[in-house]
Length: 382
Image (tube, rainbow, N blue to C red; front, side, top):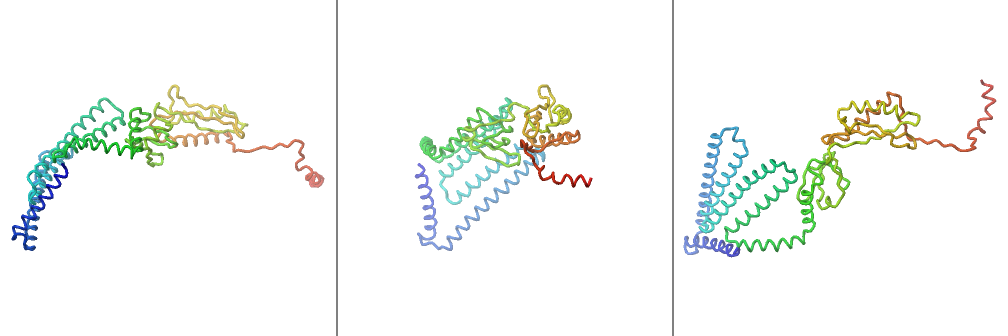
C-alpha cells in the first residue's frame, strides 16, 4: 500500500512537469518562461504563508488582550496558542501543496492526518492532567507516577502514529504484525536494554528505594534523583550525577539510609589509657545535648560508649541520631560534632593520643655500660 502511494506521488510530479512543459509548446518549452512560472508559484506560496502568519499574529494578539496579561501566562493559554499555531501551519502547508499541484486525495489525507494528530495531542494533555491529579489525590509514590506517565505517553504516541498512517491508506493490521516481528528481532539484538527495562519496572513496583532517598548501590553513595525505565540516577555529595543500569541495580546489594526515618551516626573517639572513660563521657555529652541537629527524642538520645581497648588508646564511640532531611549534610554534621568534641576534650585536659609503641627487653642493660665511665666525672662536676 505504501509503495502505491509513493508511486502515485511520483506520477503526480511527472504529470505536473509534463503539463507545464506541454503548456509551453509540446515539450519544447522555453526554460526562461518555465523559470518565471516556477518563480511565480514560489512568490504566490510566500504570499499565502505571509498572510497566514499575519492572521495568526493578529488572532493571538486579540486573544491575549481579551484574556489579560496575567491569564496569558497560564499553561492552558500556552497549549491553546500551540494548537492555533499548529492549525495555521497545517493550513499553510496544505495551501502551498495545492499551489504546486498536489492531488486532492493526497491533500485530504494530509488534512485528516493533521487533525488526527492534533486530536491525539489534545487528548494526551487532558488525559495526562486527569491522571496526574488522580495520582496526586491518592498520594502515589513519585516513582510510580513517573512509570504511569511514561507508559501513557508511549501508548499515546504509538496509537497516534498508527492512526496517522492509516489516513494515508496503510494497512494497520500489517503494520502491527510487522512491528511484532521487528520487536522480536530487536528483542534478540537488544537483550541488555530490555533487561534494564524489565528491571526498571521491577524496581518501580517493589520500591527498594524512592526518589529522594540516600542509598548505596554497587559501592556508590548518592541521592536518588530519577528512576527511569532503563537507568537509575544518583547525585553524589560532590554534585556528580551517576547513571546505573537498572539490571545492575536489581542484581546488587542496596543499602537505603532513608527508608526507616532517622539515621544513627557512629563517631569514633580515642583517649589515652591514663584518662578516665567516665570523665571523657561527662565532657562529651554536653556537646551532643547542645547540638541543634542531634536528635534528643525518646529512644534516640545521644550516647557515648566504650567500644574497644586499642593498642594505643581507649576507643570510645559517640552515637547520635539525625533526621532524614539532614542526610544531605551528614558529613558536615559529623565533622562539626567531632571538632566540638576535640575542643571540649582539650579544654578538659583529656589527652587524645597518637599511636605509639613501648618496647621492653628482659635483662637488657641498655646504655649503662657507656654511661657508667662518666659517673665519676659527672659526680666531680657536681
